[in-house]
Every structure is written in structure tokens, then in C-alpha cells.
Amino acid sequence: MFIDIVKVFIPTIVSFSIGILIAPVLSEYLIDLKMWKKSSVAKTMDGKEATITASLHNDGERKTPRMGGIVVWGSVLLTTLLFWTASYFFPNTAAGKLDFLSRNQTWLPLFTLIAGAICGAFDDYLVCRDRGTYSGGGLSAKTRLFFVFLLGLFGAWWFYFKLGVSSIYIPFFGNLALGWLFIPIFVLFIIGMYSGGIIDGVDGLSGGVFAIIYSAYAIIAYTQGQIDLAAYASVVAGALLAFLWYNIPPALFFASETGTMALTTSLVVLAFLTNSVAVLLIIAFLPIVTAASSLIQIASKKFRGKKVFIVAPLHNHFQAMGWSGAKVTMRYWILGVIFAILGLVINFLG
Image 1 (cartoon, helix red, strand yellow):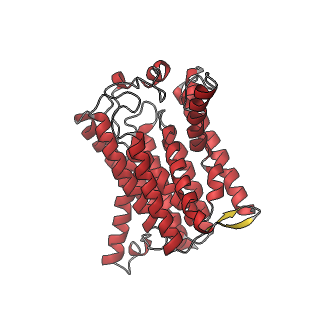
Image 2 (spheres, one colour):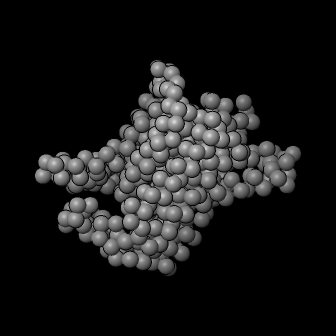
Image 3 (cartoon, helix red, strand yellow):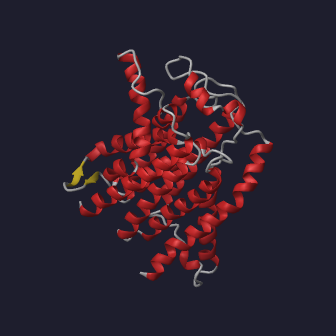
């Protein structure tokens, strides 16, 4: 029991410390390269002028660097490699026994994290070198979704054919056998969760929300005896807290695609590895409802000819109502904790 707790928390502290150290260096580097959007959003998804959104983001004048998500996945990767190296060269030492990289628990979520991070970083680079309209340049939405689709397809294949998983657990109901339908459902979850990455729109918002979500999954994995997976989720949370240290208002940088694509896709893998994907809908309710608000807005404008929200996604709606960015962030953090607790309770009781 004691060694398991140590194995979870020591790497988390290391991950946080690495993030705190590399963030200022990364920030200076990104500023030197002028890695920020050169203009605010000009058009909405339906091609109309995005005057409200442009006024809220003000990217052209603020000049806050993107690619801050490197702090998160970079800290996780360095922490993982540090303890793996210690285990390889000094297997009988205390540090060597803290290695949490394992084939059956952490290979897939770590792979997904890094794969998503690389694709997201490429998109961020293009965004900062282009003057775009809705997307601000970079890879098209279809291209990014196609990459996430392929990542989801690979993950579904791994679960279905390599791990023999073909069902999901529904609290208070039991295992729901899906057969081959497991594959499209997995892909649907990973695309849906990736869409929730648009929550990265206010200083401190995404960092706090995802830190809470990953902490909840660290608890779930730990109670299931998946200690390596619990350590991984906790290490991500630690890295997110380091990112958040510099992302609170005024943000030193944004997570952007290299952060959100990595975090959202890896999160889905975590949920399936812990067989708790049903409660992911509760624990990660805020990113999900954020994505849903944009879809509702688009559908309403197309079929009803009018908007449901002042502006989408939802956090921008609250800003347009007059809430300050700090108020939106703090209230989302509070709600994030509430939804995480609710999801944990349902997971344990169900």
C-alpha cells in the first residue's frame, strides 16, 4: 500500500517540478519565434463575421504564445523517461522501483498523448505562420479530425484485437457487450472528447479543468489496482498544475492544439483502460458540454435561423454576458470538482 502511494505521488511531484522549470524557458523561446496568432478570428463556422468572438479573443493585439501544451506532455514524457532510465540502470534502488511505464497499462495512453501532441504542434506552427479566418490558419478541421479518427481507430484496434475488449461497463447495469460495435464507439468517444478541446479559450480554464479530470481518473485507476496507470494519470495532473501556474491570468501561453489534442485523446484511452468510459460523460462534462454548445449553435442557426447562445462555445457566451475571464475560470473549476466527485461516486457505487 505505502509503496503504491509513493509510486503515484513521487513521479507527480517530479512532473510538476519539471514543468515549473521548463515553462519560463519555453515561454521565452516561443516569444522569440513569435508563436502567436497574428489576427483574431474573423469568421464563424458558417462563414459570417465573428465580431463578438474577435473582440473576446483579441489575438492580434494580445500576442500570447501558443504551444504551451509542450509544458504538459513534455513534463510527462521527461518524467516517464527519467524513472524508466532509473529502473533500467538501477533496478534495485528506490528510484528504480518507481518506474510506471508498462506495456499493459501505460504504453497506449502515453503513445496517444505524444501522437496527439505532435499533430497538434504541427497545427500550432502553421497557425502562427498564417493569417487565417475561422481556424486562424493551420490544418483544416477535417484534417485534424481525420488524424484523431485514425488515432481512435488504432486505439480501438488495440483494445479489440490485442486486449480482447468488446464491452463497456454501465454503472448500475453491468457490462454491455458490443461486439464489433466497440470499434466505432471507441472512435466516436475519442472524436467527441477531442472536440471538447475548444474549452482552451480563457486563461487558466483548460488547465484547471483537465487537472481535475485526470486526478479523478488517477483515483479510479488506483482503486482498481492499476498503479502504473494511476501514476500516469497523476503525472499528467502534476504537469497540468505546472502549466496552470503560468496559465492563470494573465496567461504566459496557451495550451492550444498541442496540448488539447494530446490531453483529450489520451483521456479517452484512460477511461477505456479503467472500464469507466460511461462516467467519463460526467467527470468530463465541462469539455463535453462546451463542444455540444458549438454544435447546438450551428444547428440552431442553420435550421431555426437564430442563435441559442450570444456566442459559442459556452465559456465565451458567459463572457459576452459580462462575466470576467477570471469568473468564468473559477466557476468552471468549481463545477469541475463537483462533476468529478459525482462521477467518482457513481463509479464506485455502480
